[in-house]
Figure 1 (tube, rainbow, N blue to C red):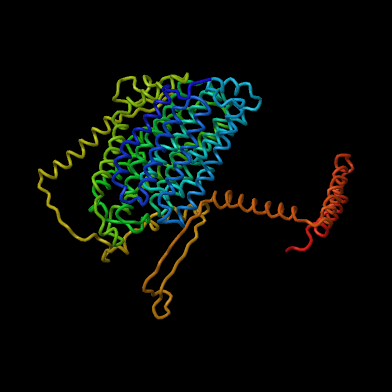
Figure 2 (figure 1 turned 90 degrees about the horizontal axis):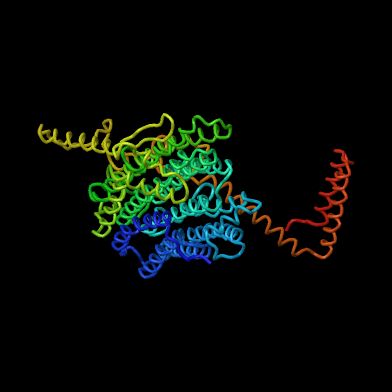
Length: 632
């Protein structure tokens, strides 16, 4: 029998992640309570949700892990339902979808634990590892873990619930779900891959790498097409989970190839980006929640000009946007730089599958980084800059002090991860060392805290502190120059090629993403609608027009809708079989006998295409006439 809890370095590291996000979120939630219709329902499940996540990362055996995992799923499901009375048409389907997907993953985790504990759920991780090593089909265990954790983390193709569940939840809950709950699944990946299923074959790492690259690319592409600000951020969670998986997959690949230093560097990059995503994504959802709190809509097209009336929200949202866009010298830039350096360190590896998978991942991450910048130019610019696009945006004001305090505290976490990156990376290295990996912190910072080095051959060097100081110096010099030179300010209307600017003539979110949407039309397959009121029947003269575009994700249309249609088809025929007349049961037995006799010809090597065609026609006619009959 093992302890119900354990507090090793990895557990404490992820417990710290949860606390770093939960403390600012508590302040923000306190100020957000006026927007909550069922406050006590929210409070009870909120506290249980945070405690259950702490329970998962400190669980010491299979029973406690599954108990807290299910409690985390149920409490988050109830938190999504908090606002069900206000918006039942969107909240209830989102909650049902989330409930299905989270328990879809739980089934696979339960099967995994039943196998690696042989039914004794009080077994610890060391016992699981010995049983897993003796198991005849380790790849089965790999896929059980993959389906279990990836469905919670939101990796492609198990990501479709995020753009539905996160917008439906209250904004503080969205911040916790995206910033923390997804990272609890990342904890499970680190815990069980590095302790229970280790060692692994090369193919496992390649698969994780490719899934990560696809998740990053697909997440940012669908984020660009979104007009719901919280759905946009949810899709960016898919993107950043993909970046984490790219780092983790590279760590698995290097470990299999007996390159421990590069492996530890890639794992460190994955852990660093896990913390970074927690910080800036939590802050972004808080900013989106503040905008929603004041404008009462999630539609970006109804915002505009909010920087004037909501300066604290705008400034913190801008900091998080710059960080998630991986612009130097932010923390998001540092972790993505490490991930790039890890992949570029594979240039000397001579393996055909890696020569295909790693360049694809580099291409995907590079394209993702560029598209992320475009997406947050859209998100910040359309929301906070320009002119007001609605009456609600025009009358919006800054949120209350508690919500501002939560955002400022989370902004402090973002800045701390940038300014004190060596300290955090040292803790990541210690956690990996406790799991039997190399601590590469001395190799990353060989000359102190001023420079970060790649451990790869001919790797790069970056100095976040020097970049920050240089940026501050340039900004200070410009400000000082303006003050000393006495530059006069002049307020004037924005030049718009001779036309008078208005809310209707400025860029919209749809228009901004239009060129990218048309370039990737083969993926988006948008549903476009154009309505216009013409003047006196002239096709080219109209009083007003309205253009709308809706994009349904490809995986949802092809995979999930296809699976639903297949399930309906099977259930229909199961129903038909259960309600056959007695004569048709005899006909079905007769057709089965014909199938056996026809199949015998193949196994007896008496096969010919002529007889096969004749027998197939006889079978189809017999099935149609005797079994199916007339369609009802």
